[in-house]
Picture 1 (cartoon, helix red, strand yellow):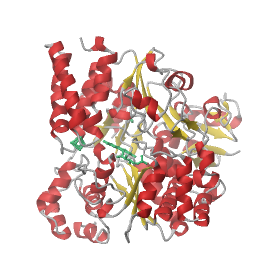
Picture 2: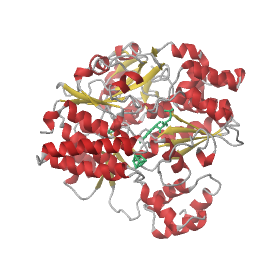
Picture 3: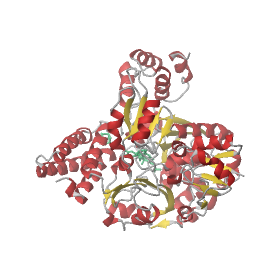
Picture 4: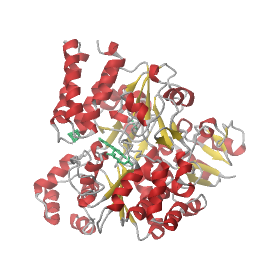
Length: 480
Length: 136
Ligand SMILES: Cc1cc2nc3c(=O)[nH]c(=O)nc-3n(C[C@H](O)[C@H](O)[C@H](O)COP(=O)(O)O)c2cc1C
Ligand code: SF4
Ligand code: FES
């Protein structure tokens, strides 16, 4: 009998460690693996491929005796079979920091391929894949790499952005905790392709499990990626440090203030050296792309949004978790068919896509396909592809207020419209919520939003107006 | 007992050592004191104001000692969607534990979520939160 239980932070928070201990005490052998990403079922126990959901310690003996109801084969669960798991191919199956498991599942093939075809052909492969940055801006990864590769400098860096600050996102965390070697391999390939000797992974401090797993994995594979070196650096609780230039300042030991661009980090990045800054998911896609070819990756997706996106279903959703799928799937399919609607069983009132800077979208727009261009045309944001589902008890005026409050708390302070405008926005929304001069205050808020949109250096100040104004546009009844 | 000098020595070879030093100082001493800032500034050839500027920028660092256990309750959107705001009165109805907001722990499908030290908690409701607050 082979028992597998995830040791991902989410599984642990749901009680996986207690369940694993109970199995061991009952005499079973337990393998701690990555998470399948079916979060509503955690702790999920895998017994020779058969799944037992929401297991508690007192069910252990019944499971071992085979007298408890299972959910059947985990790999054949519709939530899994409907996905195209490229980046999450190993999810649920391998021990995160086992080099043996990684070797046995196509590990290091991408790096070997890159070394065999050379740096230039590696970048060509990434270009052919159509891979765009998964951190939010959607900039083509291959073009960024090419810029860094052609920069003349003795020292260059690869920086992995693992600051994952957006609410409703956890795919980066799942990669680092579930498949850390894949990310390290992606960074090593990037280093080889652009001629960088050193890589930093900047992980938010809110992720202690990811930090620990990455450090263990880096130590275990240092000899395999040499002469390339990877080091973990830990953030300090500032959301804005996810913005790439703020992140670079933070890595340098400075305040996380956003830098004006140009110069581009690709030319003058960390310590003024040419630097690739890529999101975890961008770098994690690289080994698959090298192993299977750029065209194979580009055969997924739609339009200019190529490949797959690990979509994160979160908030008040029945089937929350990680769903990796080619671009082009509609928002409605994700929320209703796959997510199963709300967890509370009440009607879906809206979703927020793309974290705290993303617009609120009502069900009337659920025909929107997951595609960078389609979302941009609808004044919405794919961002890091987190979807927060809300039921009909949500108060959108409170959510709009929170968007402004979050901006005020997290502003780096460099631009006045962001620093002061957000505080003013909170005050104005407080007036509206209190029913004071509502129409005049709504007009003031619209003006303030325009000022923030056009007078902010980065998307924190520049995009906070989107959740605020979309809430007012789609749910005016909550403001009057 | 590790001293500040040990921490400074350990990070001497790093590029951009300030944040790793501050994290270690806070872990060791519970906060970053005026005196620690002065010593760090001296060791890194920075002004005290520069070090203070960095310490004050980041939410993680505290300059005052916190004697109570700290409980970080996620107040971000996905946890709001799962009902965290209704738990706030429970959290604030006691004073033994210092409850602080945190914005996302990556447990957004199983919120409300919280972080205590390096231990994560999910699926909090009023009863579980009350029990947790009593146990930390
Ligand atoms: C306020 C703000 C926060 C951001 N947070 C993140 C983040 O947590 N993770 C991330 O990868 N990118 C984040 N970004 C985007 C980065 O600036 C940058 O575009 C990205 O790291 C580039 O990598 P990619 O091309 O692989 O996406 C943020 C941007 C802004 C303006
Ligand atoms: S918009 Fe806000 S966070 Fe961005 S640079 Fe300006 S002040 Fe800083
Ligand atoms: S929003 Fe609370 S854990 Fe992400």
